[in-house]
Length: 103
Image (cartoon, rainbow, N blue to C red; front, side):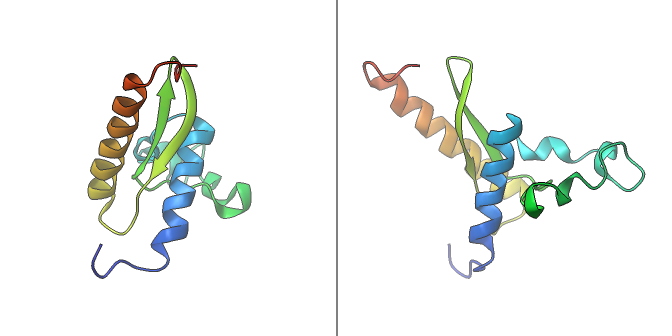
């Protein structure tokens, strides 16, 4: 992406790490539970600071099992989420064409 930020590389990796590790999209962390005073406030400091609350991380689920995730960064969280969803859809489409690739 033109003008992408170098720091976006690690942020994208951390979004994938969070999405795969907790098996939900990172955009779901945009709620009051994760804001100051919320029951989960401060969770972003866990896992060496790798846990991210920013949209753009989507888990990849095959046959009910999370097998990985895609993390995207450098746009807005909504843009990153859109691109990550397209990436997950591409992986799932590819997987559905391969014999024996199912878990």
